[in-house]
Length: 117
Length: 113
Image 1: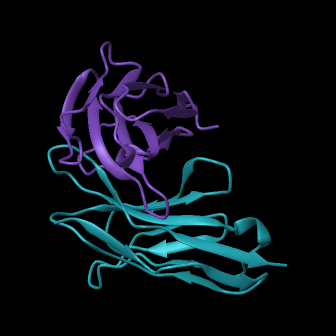
Image 2: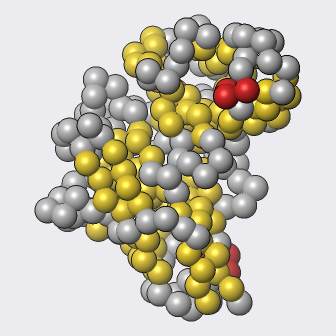
Image 3: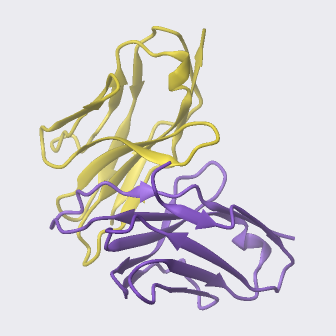
């Protein structure tokens, strides 16, 4: 257990429905990341927060995806009008950032596995 | 751009064999390099890291050396155990205004008793 939790662990939904995932990082960590991982691939970066500010978004993040970190603590990732191609594992990671070269260790949650039927 | 290429798996070894998993990278800038591991049924966790050229990261008998001249960060272990069976991901982090981490596709290792 890394100290990062995600909820739910599994989600099955029908195409066109909206889903929301939650991530609770390690409490003192100021940086929070969302990744998507499909079978047989490494995690792909989606977006990144420093405190409550969303500083970077991947081109993978279509306008159906939105993420928030309202008080700089937990974060939510919402997918609107889900498509079958959204089926994947969604991972959250947190780190105590401060270095200039991204050398901090990221602590990953267990992930939310999404299946869109 | 920034990318990581690692050897395809699966890699199957007998217990006590020598392990090498190759990893090369391209980066626009000076990256930090990582190996993460995912054991069956568990989340990703850091195995080791190196933040500057010629640094050697090590943990649990695994080692990797940051080779800037060959843009490589190969993972090695002298004697693998059944409990090392997992998926290993090579990764880099570079300052692009943020610090996103770029992962390789992963290499699955099976160790037979």
